[in-house]
Length: 443
Ligand SMILES: [Cu+2]
Image 1: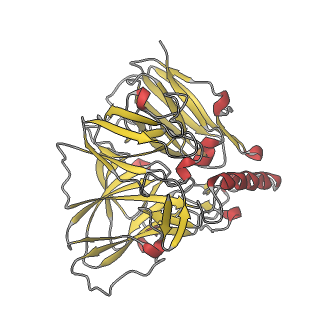
Image 2 (image 1 turned 120 degrees about the horizontal axis):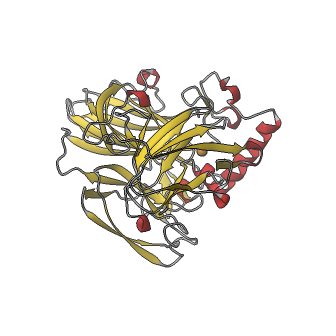
């Protein structure tokens, strides 16, 4: 499909629009989605964050055969939990084109009060702007091997000083504790639109606006803020948390947050800064009583971006969605590994092609300790389950968690959804380079 980036027309892949049209359902619904593959290569669709039946999870050659070019597949599955989810391919580097869309599951007994319900999808864009994702992977490999030749990866020893720059060799972030990413992007998008064509939301002054924030990027964490406003975080990866107010928050790839802002009179920038990359995706929140000539300048940096940033420690699961107390039945370490020279990312020192599954049994409470042995952060995603992070009883429920260099993160979940489930880094380039394994139900 052709895609208009503020006047630059590129040829890319998408679900008819970029982002694809959101799918909206109610918790408990059975969803039926007919997918026809008009691409020249195999396709698979993964329903990110949904506790789905395994044979609909959309991981080719693990849960089902790929959808071949010219053929079709109809997904049919229940959506048990309300929340903000999304869907995307699970094949190659397809996600770094335009193949992504929101999947919003409404709560029939929604306790949250708001006047507007808006979804903002952030994405790092390079396809058609001088290169494509396959070329970007080649560049990332070269960048890494040249750094290894210089005596180590960027961020080694956490000696970075923060800031960040758009140049490939020094994409660093204090918040990410070092190397911010492997890939440079010419554009960052909100709902498929670059800053030069930023979207505007118009609301009445005083309205409560629910923003569903989704990071559909491939190699970029976004630091998000609304100029002139604090944000009340209400949900993490679709699951409710005790409300917490912050100035800004960071989304790794695959993460979602729902926040509520009470609109102040005026025209305000919504900025998703590409963490450590010196560029942003932008939108505008405008109230109906703002004068028509008022608009924040493109490229503005709201002070809130440098304000109080949400941490995982700030998040407490609402008691209604907290993981029940239980003894751990099975615990094991999971090492996040990488051979920087050859850009072979892996888990427990193995590439996915050579992976050893993490065996679990139905009914077990499972604890995995994710140990990042590399000098780069990884947003780790588990399919089919929503784990609790941090090892504390009120830890937030999530399906994707950022693990910083050298950091250990505990995830706990109930093995209550039998099947073969991918667990992988949601950096598209790390996944394609082997950073994945399988949580495998065994008898
Ligand atoms: Cu990774």
